[in-house]
Length: 361
Image 1 (cartoon, one colour):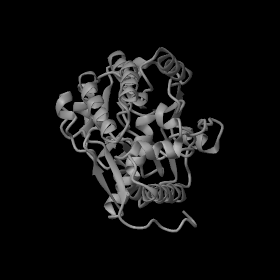
Image 2 (cartoon, helix red, strand yellow):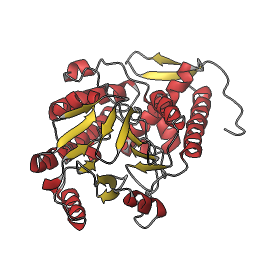
Image 3 (spheres, one colour):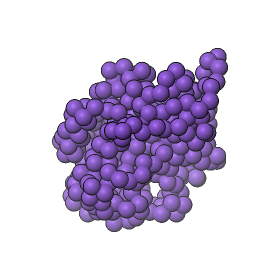
Image 4 (spheres, helix red, strand yellow):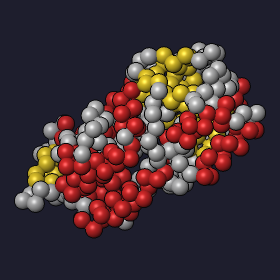
């Protein structure tokens, strides 16, 4: 999403939106304070009455959900199941308030439950992890401090919550009139989960695949052992988020019985295979471009980000750094580059082979 244009919004008059509504799935575009724009929450008029994702912890988001429910003859107190697609605060910030008001169960992939229960406590560990990655990859201290201040300010848009219905990868979530196969698809975040209604050919996809922008493979602290303090988090191994994301895209591409994807942002998706192929090729092209930059001279990931995005690499430093490191990982895995730390612990990447010809790259 780095440097992305203003996103296309959900169109309630589209054929796809009307198809979903006929199947009892109503999109509720909820405002967020973030550049990505509104999040699509989904009301499933079934038994139990279900809401997928919640929007951020804000008055405008809560008002929007209340009005949308009222327009369908429901109240927040009528909700019986809240489903979370992944851990980002624009998707789960209101979960605790909605659960407390309604008494609804909260369903999420099992690896997310401990993290969400300790949301406030673990933010410091998440920030320490991110700060260590930024320092290692050449982001100056003043920029790191500014980004950490922004992160601290953003915490209020999220909130802890208790998952009462942990879901396992591969299990089935049963409602009265439909059932969903639950698939963990990490990459954009460690907890990305998609829900496949095979009977209707419908996939509720969160931010796994978006029509208008490429989902960022954000580098996030692993969820496997969420009880970490800040000091320990700094030493955790950085996951290869883009490699993980590409594997997840390949798994989704191989799925059958998907005619309509309902994403977390923007319009519905009807032809997902060409879109996944396009995104895969996009990442391959970017990796080749980064290889050429490294072959020109050794560079830090921050220097590469500045070369590609200019000032955006400062204002959105962690987002662009995640993009660069993801593509460098592809080059490292193929033995095309290597990392060389200097005396200050900052890593530069050096080329081990000539980059491909520029034509078609």
